[in-house]
Image 1 (cartoon, rainbow, N blue to C red):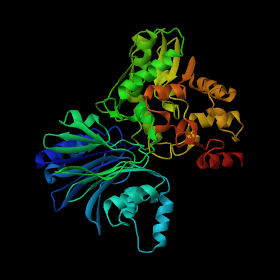
Image 2 (cartoon, rainbow, N blue to C red):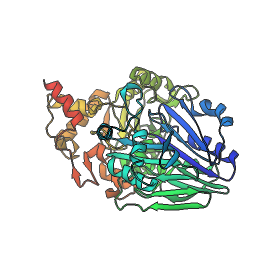
Image 3 (cartoon, helix red, strand yellow):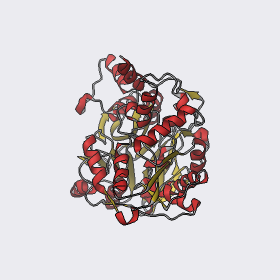
Image 4 (cartoon, rainbow, N blue to C red):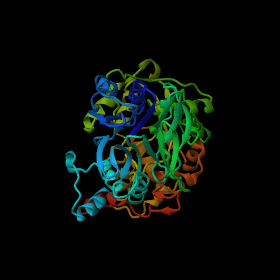
Length: 492
């Protein structure tokens, strides 16, 4: 994932300060790069840094004195350099995007065929999706027409902020997979993905963009440029995992929805344990909801050491990620010895880090370890957002287990998405054994949707079901192209 924040202010000092702290409130979403760009009405000034081994604030603190302007946008990014400053017939502008361009190579090739287009190449021979998005915008005669053009051509998603000399264009991706919200303060406006960034900076929630909507924010106010569409497919995982607890999306608070997820797990459970616990951080709220509903104690057999250890998904090397995950969680032997413990977590993706984490609890003489997950088993890689560092579906523990069960050939993946099927139960039991768990249960899809409290047709559940467009078009009868390629290779 990535996250962005923008500011329109009457004073330069407030703009720079709010941009700095507002962007920092998105650090939980990004992994490697961050950047700020401001405009003083004539010139754009920009700074970009690598944040893979340092906090955002420590990298950018010394740069603030170099920035000047009353309009600004900032980003915490997955991997690409952002913001970009683009010169075009529309004028000079800064641009930030959040999402995933699934058809990046195809769009680039079509541009190359026109012979008068070129792109800067990032490391690893990759193209910058933000630069390609800017190219699609520049094909039209206005920013709003260009954004609509980009939304129509991009497969995946792309929310964006565009900083001009007169203000900021804010656009939510065509199907609203990520949130975009506007706050109003005493001296201006802010635009954000995480509404939690507003409160400490003095903004009140003012307006939430609809799917595909485009607005222009200036000192004069907020002007709608493109009306929202009728269809929304917002990412369910925002509430389950990567959204910040203090944020609201579509009026639904993240922390509160996680309490409901935990309560839903407890509602369908009947197990005797000494206490419930959460795998830090996102598992904590799910466990609190479980413990309250089940009327059992909540305890912390792990404490998280954060002053010097980064998030475990940030380092690009898997062995380094595993080291970080191990070093930052410190078990408490006094709370685990001879205890039956029920852990809650948001999900299991690969399972390697979690297995090591739980083994350390066993090493401290835990009697039983039960695991409850706040969502169904993840079976499909996301095509719309970059919230997982997995390069292939075959890295998922579910896919590895299914391949073992099927002897390397998987023709009917829908047998494993059906919560009532024997194969589904066999998959979960096999994962339980691999994870060395006393028991393992996943959240039911309908319970998860009810806990989020958004109509099912407005949520994307692709990573669990393989179905698109509110489950109207289902692609789960075979594996995806990436998964099938790996399976075919294994069979050969």
